Amino acid sequence: MALQTNYPDTQAAAIAGAPATMLPATEISRTVEGAAIAFGKAVEQGATDKAVKAFAGGKIVGIAMLDRSASGLSVTDGQVTGRATDAFGVGESARVRTKGDAWIVAAVAVAAGDAVFLTDAGAFTNVEADNTAFPGARWDTSTTAAGQLAVVRLG
Image 1: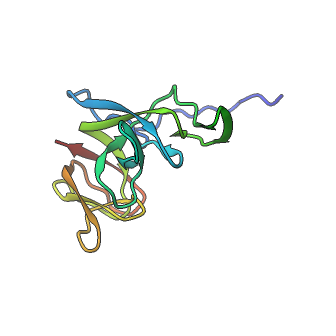
Image 2: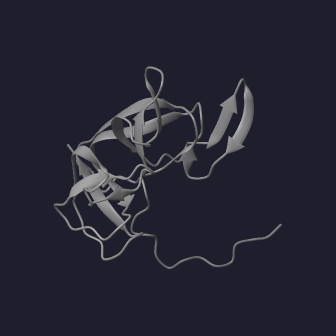
Image 3: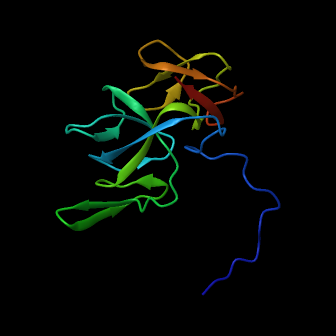
């Protein structure tokens, strides 16, 4: 059995789906449908009541938040059919933030105050053309390049 012998000197400043501040926020629980949903990704209304799926151009519900108790296991008819890391599996109850702030991976360089848009693949951007507006959301911090973490504020 291998042992870890190297430890970082500092902890990461943020990770996708983590709350950005301790300001009041609203979170709801929704059952995951379709496929696993990674932390920090936008979710849309699922086919059934109180369900969500990864955003693909539908009605936006919120952002899947980091949850260390999530197993990432997808279960169908009582059988485990898959496992995703850093994600909610199909059938799991996801924490979905509808108000407050969260760390998100920006698909492009963004500026604080910009509106938030989603591509059909669910990537967060500030580009309006051919993308879906995220109602009531704005970028709270800036990035200098694609793939960097920034804060999105909802509500």
